Amino acid sequence: MSDDRASTGGVAAAPRGLRVLVVDDERVSRATTVQQLERAGYCAAAAASAQDALERIAREPWDVVVTDLRMPGMDGLELLRRVRDDRPDIDVVLMTAYGTVEAAVDALQHGAADFLTKPFSFRVLEARLRKLAELRGTRRELHRVRDELRAARGLGPLIGRSAAMVEVRERVGLFARHDLPVLVTGETGTGKELVARAIHEASPRAAGPFVAVGCGTIPRELAESELFGHERGAFTGATGRRAGAFERADGGTLLLDDIDDLPADIQVKLLRVLQDGRFSRVGGEREMACDVRVVATTKIDLERAAAEGRFRPDLYYRLRTLELRLPALRERRDDIPLLAAHFLAQIAARDGRDPPPLADDAAAALIAAPWPGNVRELRGAIEGAYVLARGGPVEAAHLPASVRGGAAVGAPFALHLDGVDRLDMPAVVRAFEHALIDWALDRAGGSQARAAELLGLPRTTLQSKLSSR
Image 1: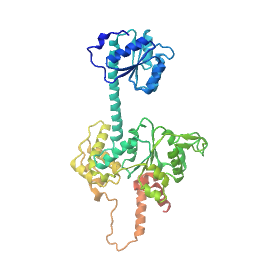
Image 2: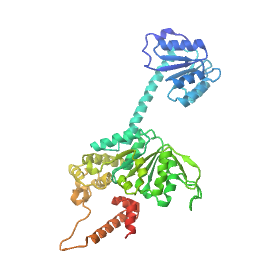
Image 3: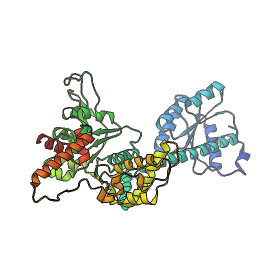
Image 4: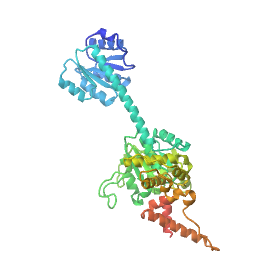
């Protein structure tokens, strides 16, 4: 490289803090380059070989490596490959006295940031370094924006300005930075799976898989296979090897929804995986390791269930290392108009329309309603109202009757006891319970797991009630 001292004077200062490592087996060339870089305001140092450069890169922070292409031992192209593999954040500029179009294309295809043909002036090198500094700044800004978008994608759907939701979002962000199990509790429809996904999306595991398993929907005899997989011939119908949820979630997050519905014998095996990170497929002898972050949800009082022997206490204590309770919608009524507007915007965007306004009477009715189904019920009410509004403002008249009437209209039953002097209360209660169960099974299309969810009961409780009828 030519000295070209005049080029270092009267120009703007070097990009602040840019650290440049010069790799060249020619002592005079590398010393001259480092001297000119330092005189221009760069932080620069020299390495006499590619191996020397790799050792310095391993222990020191560098932004750019400027390396000769042809050197004894490891050449510049191999150094480029090693740097791209180990430190993709470092930009590599190749220089050679044997410059050809083919050599330049080969270098750029292998990830070189630039290619210079010797001899070149320091003015040329400095111009390339300034360009690289700008590109590095742009990349940093893009990474920052991506991080913000990822956080928004994870936390944005957790709508609400209430103190309860502010705390939920804070805990999601905090828990996402750790790999410990998380137990998310809350009533049906409060958004427990949404929170689990938010934790995953805001975590370092976001690029990995997110696997959701509904524990209440798995047939008891298939629960172990669903979680841990099975080998061919492990049981009747096992015609091939199948990966379980833990295998599919490796490197990511596994959601165990309604974990209280998991059979007791499977709870024992789940505890071992949480403690040791190892499991075996059904019918298999080889132990397998997995790297999985578990988020479990429950709609019941799991502490009470553990105390009453309905859930393993040791598993409960392991799961609740990090616990997050979701508030019922009635506990954060001020968030309801905001949620309604959010749902209207989502639904309208799906139709390619602008969201319709929410009329004051509709907002008042929404705030006053009891919402036993929480956010899930609210979304259903908004979806129906959107259709009935036909593109106009959503008014109270478009809402379901149970919402328009507030708590009174929303009552699930009424007593008609005029002219009744006395009654058999246990018999009436049994008949009412049977009617409720029949209603839930009808609404759920015969699915016991879904019916139990509609009734706010554990699936095992519903099964017990059905067997006693």
